[in-house]
Length: 329
Ligand code: BDP
Image 1 (cartoon, rainbow, N blue to C red):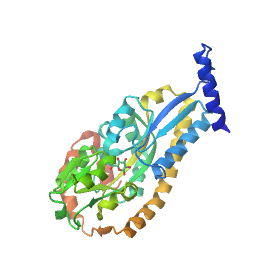
Image 2: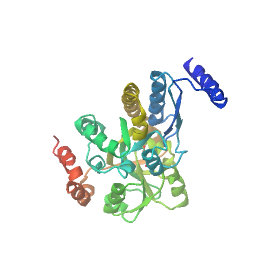
Image 3: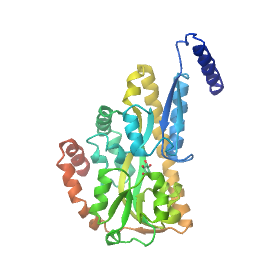
Image 4: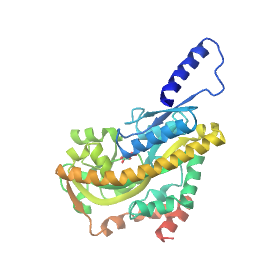
C-alpha cells in the first residue's frame, strides 16, 4: 500500500512545485545506494531489507534507489563518491575503504582472524566502535558490519598447491595497498583490476590468478575460467554498510535512530544469509569441476607477512588494536 501511495504523492508534489505551489512540509528526499553485487547476493538482499525498513520507519520521507552491480562505477570510485556525498548509501569492503580512512588496517591484515566469529568478537564490541569513529571522521558512517567472507587464491592455468606456485603469477587485487603488498610478499605480481573486469582479465590472459571469497567466486563466474583454488583463507575481513557523513548530518535524531536500527538488522540478516550461501557456493563450484587444495602448514605464507605486520605494529594508529587482537585479549 505504502509503495503505491508515495510515488503518486511524490508526482503530485512535483507537479505542484512546477506550478509554483509550495511543497508540503514532509517532502520526500531521494537517496542513491551503491553496491557491486547482483540480485540474490547476500549483500544485495540485506541492502534491500535495509532500504524497505528505512522507507517504512521514516514514513516515506526518504526513498532510496539501489544501484547494484557497480553500475554507478567501480568500488574505488564509489568510495570517493560517498566520501564526497555524491552518493548516499553503500556497502564497501574494508580493503578499498581503508584507502580513504586512516587507521583501519588491523582489520585488513592477512592471516589475522581464524574465522568470521573471531573477527566479529572485536568488531561488535568497543573496537568496532572505535573503527566507526575513525570512519566517521573520514566521511563514512557505519550502520552495520557485514561478513566479507574468507578470501583465497584461485588460478586459471595451473594448480596452486604451495606458496612457491604463486611465484611470478599475475594476481588480480582490488585497489588496496595492503592487498598489493600481500601479493608482492608472497612472490607474485599484483595487478589492480576492478571487480567487474576480472572475468575478462582471465579470458584475455592479462591475469593468471585472483583472490576472493567463495560466494563471489561463484556469483561472478570466475570459477568457470579459474578452476584451481588454494584454500589459504588469507583474508578474513569485514565489509560495511555506510552512509555519507553529509547525509548523516542532515538527519533528525529520530531518523538517525531509524537508519541505525535498519542497518543493525540488515547486518544480522546478511550474516545469516552468508552462512547458507557459502555452503551452497562451495558445493556448486565443486560440481562444476573446481579443484580445492587445502593448506596444512601456514608458516610459509605467514612468515612472509612479517614486513606488513611490522609496518602496522609500528603505526601508532593501528598498533593498539592489532596487539589486542594478536594477544587474543
Ligand atoms: C567481493 C567483495 C567486494 C570486493 C570484491 C573484489 O564483496 O566488496 O570489492 O570482492 O574483490 O567479495 O573486488
